[in-house]
Image (cartoon, rainbow, N blue to C red; front, side):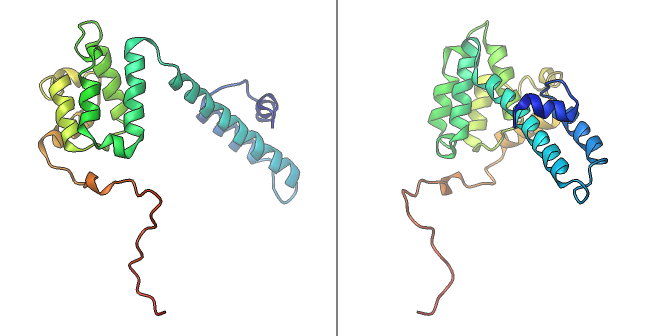
Length: 189
């Protein structure tokens, strides 16, 4: 379905506000009984799904266009994080944290802020990476100052992981190169 038609059916201007799309859909759904009007219901559902797809697509496009040194650096951070095998390797993070963007007077705070913002929603990292992050960005040392920008529970989460061993054994993640997983069940052949 065309996005223009989708928003027309929903009675909305083009928007990426998913909550607004959802409210409009639910309001229209009250007057669209799938048993009485199956085609109308199908059309409304398709419009809703297309509008949500459009809203999500906008966010992805904005994320893919990094701005400036810190934006390009954050793109590299996201790439390392997305690959679980790469994510678990402290050398990958050390290379990121050794980047001049992390040491520059004019980029340090921006890099730290963007990284912490990203990690607030992507926090599955080995303890060694949390320790490197703290050594580079002084999160525990600047705890009180960072409370103004980040939720205190997230900062406590970082502090916990810096000071506590991993609860997840990241060494279990490895590439299997096409190997089949082992079947623990016994079979009678």
